[in-house]
Image (cartoon, rainbow, N blue to C red; front, side, top):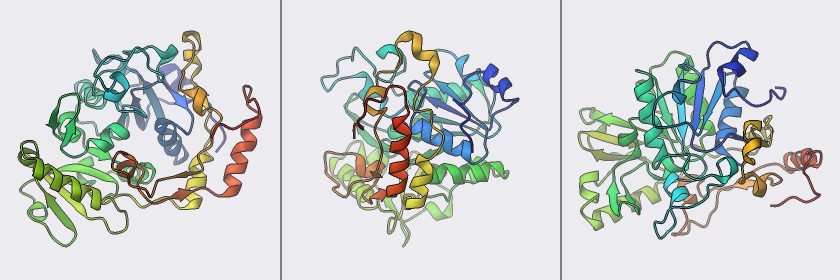
Length: 358
């Protein structure tokens, strides 16, 4: 597929392509940067490669629904992420003081995204459009998929699925799950029927027979009501989550939230070398959208503009690191030829100074 420039961010962009409707609209809590270091860029380009019409709403004004209606109602679903960093980490220091800059916003301006952006954006979409599938993903959704301790509230919060009212949560690196979800939605499946895809979580009714008790392929962990008041129960629940973060032997995990179960399917299978090569060969512009030029651009691009991703994952599983819960412990690598081909492309970029950062 030839390089099609930046994806549509307005009705005018859609008209230039002859599009009256989009299949997917991706909403992000950071500026539109079409670079493979940004999850928004990878997912949007991958869906484009699969033949879907994709639009971007970046850093919408969350105080009303106007920006969320800017591209109209998508045919299949809204995809929502806070960006490459949890919105609370982005906003506050470890001392809970408000940060003065946001490297992922135009000119580094702070305050352009809300606290708990995924929850806020998803609920604004629900206000703007009724009965539209809402799918959340990215680091904020991934790490908050179960009942979890929140440093800023100093309390255990419910799964982000409950507060966001989303239909599906994609956790981890979402290439395989989002392609499967897109195919099912495009074939006419209701979003409530999409419950068997690896790397996803959803809320299931307590009355469903298959959600009643632990079995050979699923484990019920202590409920939200239990873990919010009992540290031992919290530790027990976390241990199971940690142990089952394995795409080969991991089981389905269930956690009761009120009268519904949070159901996490086993992790998505890791990408093989050919699939990794395909992801990084997509037609990225490798920079931010030109609408941000007047504001001074997007500071975050400086560190990664001339970087190359050679692999994903880390076998360490360190207790202080969240990588195991997002990328996983299995190393997924690109081929040597894929990396060299990307390096050759960097040489021709205007700002390239002769070295690759990392």
